[in-house]
Length: 339
Image 1: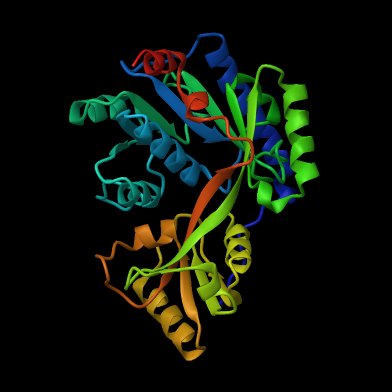
Image 2: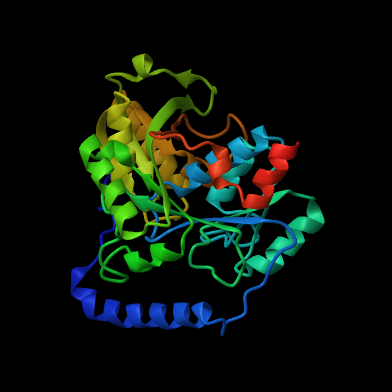
């Protein structure tokens, strides 16, 4: 079973012009101080992007949580909670973070200020990460990090004709830019794009990283297959993410022989019937069924339950490692130096 990945629709370009005008009006109100911005009593680091999905934001948030916790900082995460099931505390991205970082304080709510106050009532933290916060300007942030795709760093056409939420000029309000997905382009290409970003936005600190598979996990047995074990093994892929072609590329790069794939809409839950059917089809083809970490988190199975399936675990690797201090507000950097 296969389905086509979602693509932008160029014939909707006139609607993009209307959308662009709305974005400009809203940003203008914030820039002139005509829209209220509220401040939490702890430093806030926003992680966002210019596009809809596909920039590797969730692995990057995990990278920052890991780095900040290694410094001894208590970290909290705020998110809107897009795609969260009715009555659920967290969406798939939040569940992924909870599994990877037990005890991590998280609250998801469209009102990020109120969510932040609730988070601080639950647990005292040193810093809050505002997940997908670049366009959420109602909450003050002490550091603004914007992720951009190495294949299309300036976003392309705006919604609904393209993937972009904002024009490239919006990078002018970011403090840090991170070029992601550099594994998909030649080294000369990502270096040229970094140089162009620095030329267009001289005050912007720019870094680059690539994604890589860190393991193929048998969810039922919890055994992690190495690249050597995975090489040449037939696989069926099942995912509900914004850019499934990256998942496909990662699976092939890890050595899997992908014989079929099924793509669902981003954040869409995988029905149990579909999961079981795909697992059965994999068994009949002497293949394995492979999901993303986010899709696995969305399933909600207890450990070891459900049909046999694998998760392709993805991580980020710096091409020019700036160190975690590059993503700490100035006050926290000073505190770390004094401690």
